[in-house]
Length: 499
Image 1: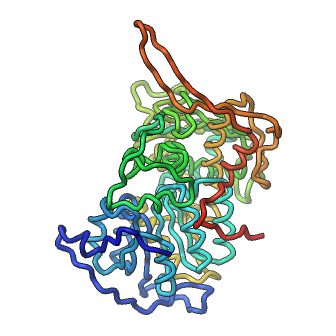
Image 2 (image 1 turned 90 degrees about the vertical axis):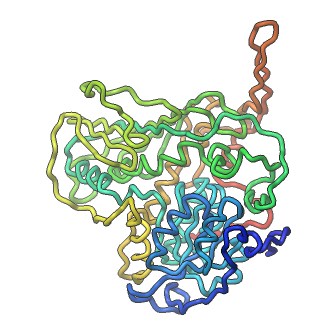
């Protein structure tokens, strides 16, 4: 694998910060299970590499660096990541995670991935096949197929895993699950959830190309998706609103907001999906959308005091909120820290905020129920990452799973990213039937097509508004299949799906 063709050295690039390129001393490592190394004692330090360090990856890095060794850092944008490289001079710097794996694979025990959504799966999957423990930011993957792949690979290689939805380690999610399984609100047949995002630009036309900054390797940012001209609107951070790179407000926040729904209601694969939105463009996510997923009746687990009938889960974003239920306290803001959830039960209504925080019952009751969920200390302030570190140091045979282990995070993420094809196929004007096992829509015919708007060109002519909206007609079945399982660009490959 070749390094960035511009040959920007870390010493040169960080010179203005006063940092110097440091030599790297690899400490003895004994962590990676399955590769002939013994499981370390809890006091041993992990050698951790971080891919994508400019944003949330820096927070994840800080939350583990106090006790573990950060031995390698990788980012495609050395301008955005400049301060992080400077703050970690002992970590070897890389542009390309593939070269990092080639050169340091034997000395890395674990990998944190916090890149754009579209590259999560390829970085994480290849780390798992090398026997590395993995912590991957939310959404876990860009597609349903990628989620299924990571779920199966993690089970096959027996590595410690965690998705970066830190609220799953929080007390609010624990309490919601315990209230639900104790039957405090009875059977639930409808749940509504929402976020106040996006807070980045969406509903945009494709911009014109610009010169790529010297500090950015655009080819590596594009990664496995199709090439397009660079524009500063895409990165850093605003990539969330573009379908090729992100999953919109749904992918960004549903992994935080909908986790207590998935876990407390024992959800699996949905059977139906439908959606609507503001103007739908081919490349950029809409400003607001509504997605409805239907889940079949589930078998109640042992100890549960409630049944689990068929349930509808409805998602709103872009400023949309569900109607306030009867009895809602006048003047109370439904938005709690970025969103909220309403569980409509037969006996009561349960409400919680973003990250599952501060659950409460509309009746005003405050149930005291058995504590059945494992607690994580300082969940929202590094405890989620350290729970993963703890799991990395336990043997696969006796390991206590993390709070968002891929065995749960993978199926949950499938639920989240199902919203993307539902939104983009809304032009079919029907409820979509989903076969979760086969990962395919079963009621899209081979000759059906969907029409998408390429751009929204608005002008005023002689005082009247005029809309010029060129569109494109696509084979719906092929379009759906590609959203479920992407075709990767040359140079980027996923491992085969385990049986």
